[in-house]
Image (cartoon, rainbow, N blue to C red; front, side):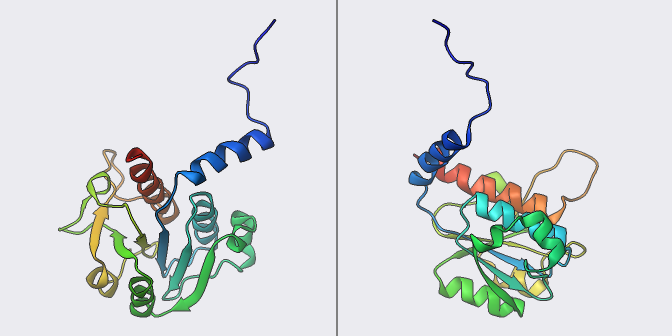
Length: 181
């Protein structure tokens, strides 16, 4: 009798079963404030990643492109319907709404007081904040944040693409939660 190859790709039913197991072990709420991210492909990628990691709500801020943009839809693949999101408002208003909803706000940015992402407290109800492609988080957003974390890098590039940074931060938040199980 031969045993099935454990390295075969999972079938859709197996993927659903696997994801259901992880979902049962996930209690913390995740939110995001996306400030002035204008690239539609970045927005689409952020929404797709947010849906994959079970983000509960996204507040768009500043002049952020909404996920309904046709170019954003090409990357999001309809995942914007799986994540509650709010139309763009001034950044201070988005930060206030997240705080009022019970989230701890952690900006992902390179600042003098930022801690490495893996040392940041990302458990519980956490709202990750990312800023524009060109300038990152605004001073107002950084002032309103409860904490700031950066993603350590060892290469010769100074920063990540905003959608990649969002994905890394979301993955780390869930990793911290699952590691505590």
